[in-house]
Length: 506
Picture 1 (cartoon, rainbow, N blue to C red):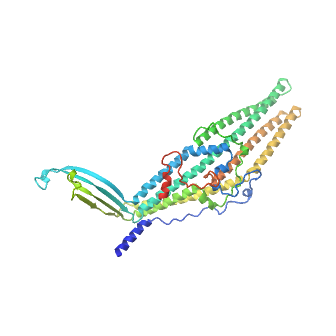
Picture 2 (cartoon, helix red, strand yellow; picture 1 turned 180 degrees about the horizontal axis):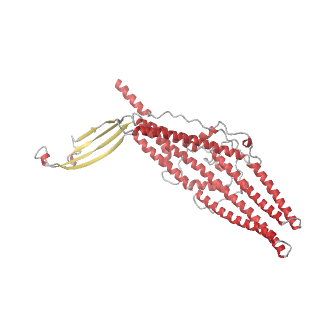
Picture 3 (tube, rainbow, N blue to C red; picture 1 turned 90 degrees about the horizontal axis):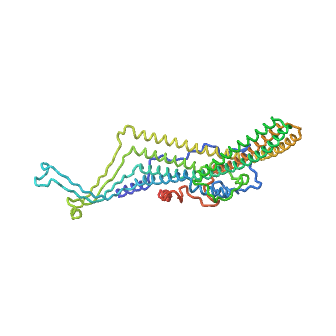
């Protein structure tokens, strides 16, 4: 009865997978319990004509519902299938899944089929009998088995470490996908901004050229000064230079977009919306900083890496204890090939072994110290990930409520500068004022128009970045069932489903 009890205890220990890893406790979040309030944080974006998130968290809002521009939606869809950085992150996840299965295999016995033949010559003076042959043959066929009994959880800890590493790469893949959605959207907004800036510059150039034509006509007729002519010329050439610079940036913006989507821009892209008609969701609730722990994949990745480091301590501790290995073989052995399966040819061996470290030159202690240090590194990395996420959300909230007022002020400034230019032109043509007032008004109007376009683009990019910072961009449609971070993909590698199977097996 006592023997059976000991066996039951041993089996229970093996099934439970006990390890020497320290008990894991999630570090406290090194940020305040709420996001900042007061001042700019209390300013909310305007709701007139804007679509509403209806209280949904960013992580539950599909990117097709956040972005309404059909051209942008098509570009994001292409990027999710073709972007090479995302493909690398998926392959890294699959490699980690394979590594996990390799380590997990160490928990189970190995069984190999083996067949061998050896031929040996022995000097006659060493033979037991003078008449014995000097050349002998040995044939064998059988099964070899080996198993490390993981009494102290060394292999189990290594398996836990590999699993946490794999889950971390799955979260990294998720973070890469969310980031890609944001990058494509922000680059698309940059393209639209440059389109608007080109229009502003072209209109400015057209107006400046007409002003230059009139000024030159006055100069040629002797009624205008060369100073006025050269001042008019500077506006024309400044606009010309800006036009070339913006055309160059516009072409380069397209190149950046091509790199993100992973293929040339298709000729059949849907028609897009202008910059001022993007109508993104502006009222996504921020929630609490603690929500970021489950909505931000970069934070979850950092925690998985911390769990891996914690499990590695268990493996380092187990190295101080004995390792018990069972090896054995069973089969047939015969001096002739034909006698392998005859009666009496059966052979077996059983060789249990135990290895106890006595002197390792301090290697095991150094490995344990290293494991402790690596865990502390991962704790700091995890805490920094939380702080970074908090800062990104806080920055987005600080900017979200201020852009509407800034843009409204810039629109009023543009209208005032346009009126100023009209009045200055009228006074100049009537000989009341010098051309300098016209030049100053043209320059001020041009600068104000450019500032307005840039502010509109920055407002949209801030909303996109805030959407990402709150964990949005993973689902395609609002209400979609959440995919696991290691969901298989339909591109890149034939072994894509491997990743999902690893999590199931773990």
